[in-house]
Amino acid sequence: MFVYTMKASGLKFFAVVAVSVALLAALIAILPAVNAESDAAAVNTDFRNISDEYDMVEFLKQFGYEVDPVPVEKLTVLIPDEFNSVFEKYNRIQRAQGLNLKRYAGKEAEIYTFKVTNYGVDNVFATLFIRNERVIAGDVCSADGESFVHGFKRPA
Image 1: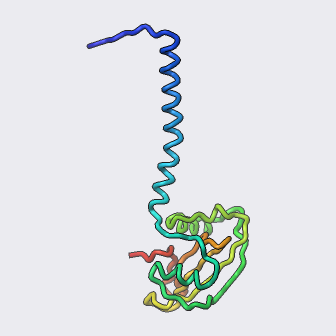
Image 2: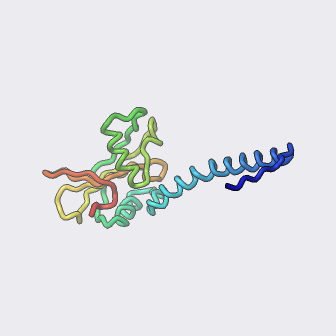
Image 3: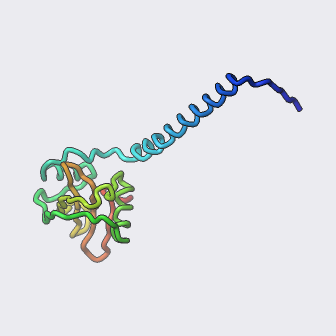
């Protein structure tokens, strides 16, 4: 076994502590940024600049959906401050596609529902939650027999 000892002066001790604190601070600052980048890297969709129904139709086209250009429904809703289990489950779908409806709790949003014409089954609808020219949530769902709800990307 090899042991090395060194007499530490006050200045050397302070320098070691200062470098350790700086290294720890840098590590703490970098770790949240790395986590945020990994979340953002999973989503390549631009949810901004949705100012009218034409932009909404074009937004849905990037996922391969053809929709009737006139929405079947348009509503103004207030997103609840507290989410019940249904909203929690819906928000999990949103989080998987890079969105988070909880950021808009207590705020109003416009909901547009479009009929999807090329899904392969009848009565499929795409819903967009819009706030400040931005898609803040949305899904594709079926209103027939074997109903389903999923994010914008069609499951394999």
